[in-house]
Image: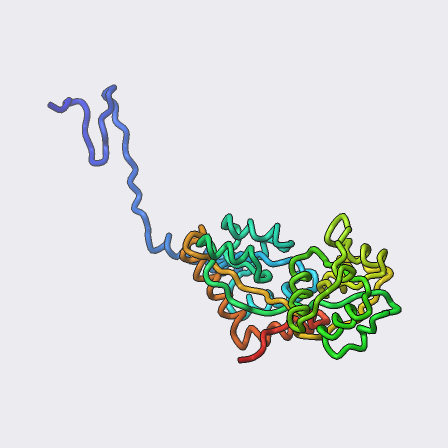
Length: 302
């Protein structure tokens, strides 16, 4: 039963102490609120309203950045694809393969090698795609006793070194060593002991110092030589320009066991498709020109 001394009114609620609290129920003006929100949105900075572009993370072998080609190429690729391209690592293979394996990158650019084949065999990489090439050069003593600077091609240059029994270092870098032995095999050459001198440098970057100290010839990558990664005091660059002295860069996309998400895989595939396309080839040539190259060579047109 209601207490006769208290007049209940609509919106009044009795409390446990017998008093009354009035509930204020002001009507919500939804159209006005929506208009206020829309007005605030239109005043926001355009860059705050715009969605961030889809991102793809890339790890590249250091020479691509050292020569300036990759920074320019990635800028052009981003503009063409609408992707944000983040270079998460630029280093020798020891620094970039783990980044890809652990899922820190969805696309890997490096030389085709045992490491890339192992990634594919482990299910971490999709089938490898040849993308471009870099060049190796032949250096030696400025007096050039074997006359390699006059050779018509790289295999002939090595044949002259063997004929003159001139010293040559078997640079322990796998790429340079592979180029040298491929040239030996191409001409059926049999190097002597003096054409297989050990690389005695404390680091791979010191091989040219070792060659200069022994008056020896040596094959090395053009990019690290040209950009001072390998000091070459006492040696002359004697021969370059033979396609037989190039090595292939491959594009490595995520395989079934790579931790990339479906969206990340799609973005990596989009960037890889662009780099392999005619438009990507043109962008590479433009990036080479911008960097004073060519440093990275497109694959022969098919």
